[in-house]
Amino acid sequence: MNSTYISRRFKKHTGLTLRSYIVDRRIALAKSYLCEGLSITEACYQSGFSDYANFIRSFTKTVGISPGRFAKKNASLPQ
Image (cartoon, rainbow, N blue to C red):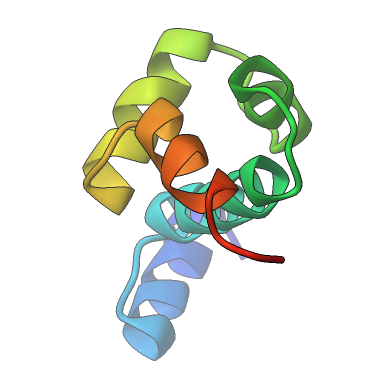
């Protein structure tokens, strides 16, 4: 099996590309880290992003708000 075959099968069964699935999982992990009180930089690298600017862009595109606003919004919620 080659990578193209695996990618096509993955998309057929999940409706998502492999890349979008991985990014979505990393963003979910970053959201949980931000809710736990980690800094944006720590959440970025702990969730598997190696580029801070890419993390900010991906997070904002996926969640709809920046990681900073997400962290502030969720810091005020009772745990």
